[in-house]
Length: 111
Image 1 (cartoon, rainbow, N blue to C red):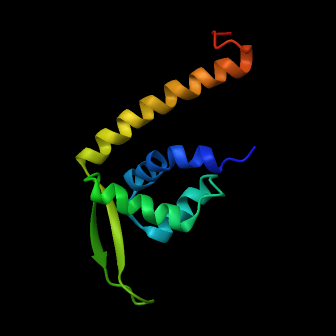
Image 2: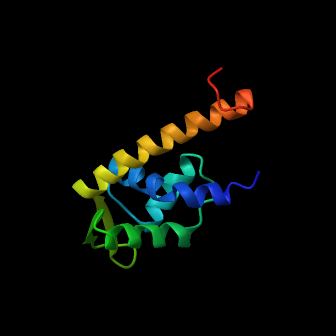
């Protein structure tokens, strides 16, 4: 099954969860998502998601100088982002439970 369409639908919540765990810059967030098992996540998709979440008021950012290259822009979750993560987690959990039921029974009824 091609997971790219599924990933598009949950990338916001995945990025929020990773940043809630620890602040991170773009490629660091990509690396942590891949380490968590989202191997197909694209760099550009994550960078775009970080920008969109920041512009939407769900993340803050700050710049950290780097000895190894250009300064890095770190993203941190704020209260609005935590609230969005909480709502999105509840939505995803309910959806995943429903899909699990459908796949087990073919009718969406609890097994």
